[in-house]
Length: 84
Image 1: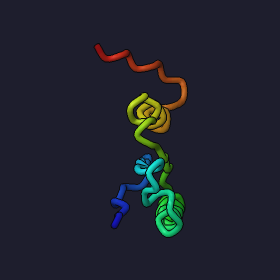
Image 2: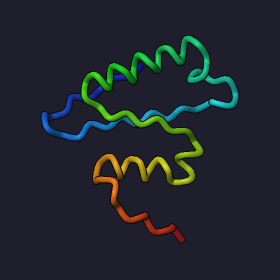
Image 3: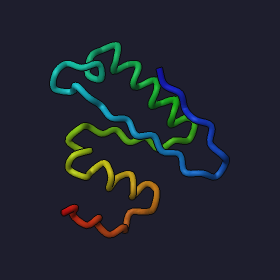
Image 4: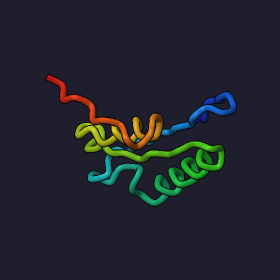
């Protein structure tokens, strides 16, 4: 189950969908699950959300964080420093 939160007008709306099980035949890559994801993400887009879909790889290599920051703050952001 999923629910879109109520957001005040004029606010940036961002939905981050983390797709798991993409190499093991998980829900996101099987017919019915894929169709449900399409419905969910399309309804979010209709409601004004920017939708980002990511995988574990994107979370671990920093791509997901970069895309979120770019959506929220603009495309010309400096890179985050490497964690020590």
